[in-house]
Length: 83
Image 1 (tube, rainbow, N blue to C red):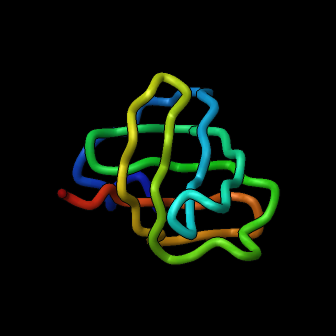
Image 2: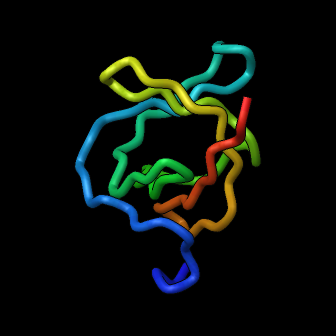
């Protein structure tokens, strides 16, 4: 996604996280590459098996319900869903 299409600036970061699916029974490690109040860009080994919606758990304890809005083979753009 082009940076000009975003409403809010995303801060570059390099944080560890985990994509949690299947009611917590399946997890995928990821790296958070950039982050804003509304979404994030995640680096993953592969997008195979990842659902459209999932929980993103950051190593600092924060958790976000997410929806995938774009992807490549090894990166995912997500928006955070309001509770």
